[in-house]
Length: 231
Image 1 (cartoon, one colour):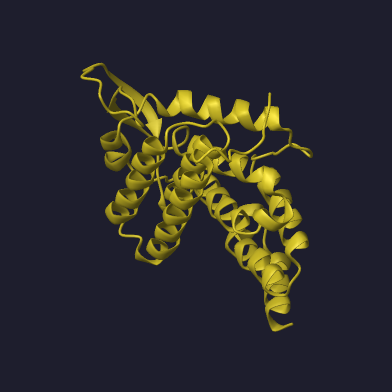
Image 2 (cartoon, one colour; image 1 turned 90 degrees about the horizontal axis):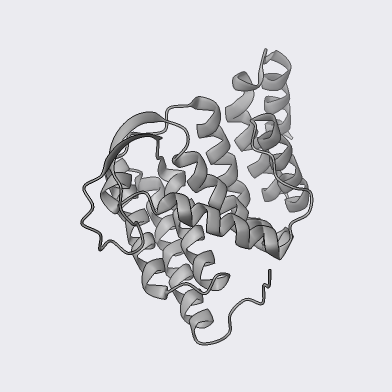
């Protein structure tokens, strides 16, 4: 009750969305802790839409496959070094969107599981769309075997939530698209290294647990029990 009163006071005095962004994260976490998980998820999606991150009201298997393939194409333009050397995400609205995406991803498995791959892809896409212009070398992220020296300037910005998105994306590559488990491991390792570089010690346990879970599930799916999704 005290939390609700505190949040109400902040919201009543906020002049714009940016003024109340931090309280938004507290609000959705508070709802979930009270057992109001579905309400927390719906509230999060409403806040995300206000931040320009809109999701469809219904998700189909075809949407998931298309989003994963699109994200894979984008990430093929980055090496592990490109990601680890990238500047931090500085756009405040997008940084808050990333926090909300990270929070809601925790609850989707029980409420809206089909949204999980879309959330992971959105986190990755924000990371490689918003940020500072950065000099990168173009080569594959998942299979780093190219000796290409092509260079380009791309807007890119990573944060600790980006690592969580990478883990979720890697898992979906195997469970949905039946990609190689080795590629999942490489992306997961990149996520762990990113957390180390950012010094985000508070996120280490969550990222490590997410990576281990992804590996275990990928082994399960690679054994022939793949998720039944057809385009």
